[in-house]
Length: 161
Ligand code: 4NP
Image (cartoon, rainbow, N blue to C red; front, side):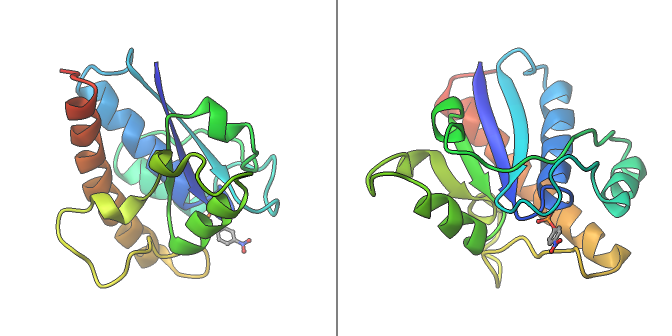
């Protein structure tokens, strides 16, 4: 099983939505027996909580259930996961700073928007926590595009079809 971890700050908005989109696309392509995802937050703000109500609503709008209990990223995740995908540069830097040695795990860790089709103004998936419903739709669109390409990348890299 190839294991993928999506990481944001609170683990209640962007990364559980990323996990939901990933799971739905993987299921649609009959790849569920090869690819397994999880999500985590770099902060401890929302440990044990359900996803934000707006995350669940945007999922419902696109017919995808978002089920997750928030947890914090831990050092063991570096070992457990094959791919660690950070939602923004702050989360990326936070994860990078948790490594024991500077050379460790670099090839596993990426930024979500590096997989987006067209180069964007920002390298960050914007934090929608303080925004309205519009912010969540924008996040959904960015994630859908980036994750579709990420799955294509996984298929090529691991010869999945
Ligand atoms: P997330 O969004 O990182 O996409 O889950 C946030 C959730 C909570 C907070 C910030 C961002 N917060 O400050 O509590």
